[in-house]
Image (cartoon, rainbow, N blue to C red):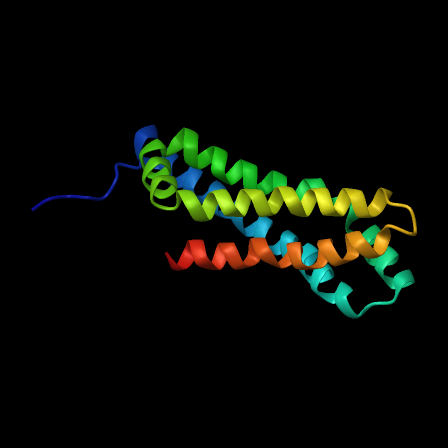
Length: 145
C-alpha cells in the first residue's frame, strides 16, 4: 500500500505544513484587515463630508500594513511552493492582473483623496468608492475560477 503521509520527524515533512499554516494565517489577516478598509469604502457613499474625512482618517494608519499580509502570503507561495505558484498564477493570470490593477488604483485614490484640496475631494470621492469594491469582486472571480 502506498503511504502518502509525510515523515514528520524530518524537516522535509513538517516544513511545508508550517509554511502552509503561515501562508494561511497571512491570507486570513489580509482578508480580515482589508475587510475593514472595504467596509469604509462602501459606507462612504452615504456619509457626509465630515464623516468621510473621519472615515478616511480611521483607516490611514493601517492602510499600507494591510497589503503587507497579501505580499507575505504570495511571497511564501512563490518561494516555498513554486510549482503551485506557477499553476495558480498561470491559470488565473488575467483575474490576478486585474486584482493588482485594482489594488494599485485603490491606493492611488486613497492617497490622492487625502491630499486633495477641498474643491477636488468630490472627484476623488467618486473615484475612491467604486474602486474600493473592484478588488473584492475580482477576488470572488479568482476564487470561483
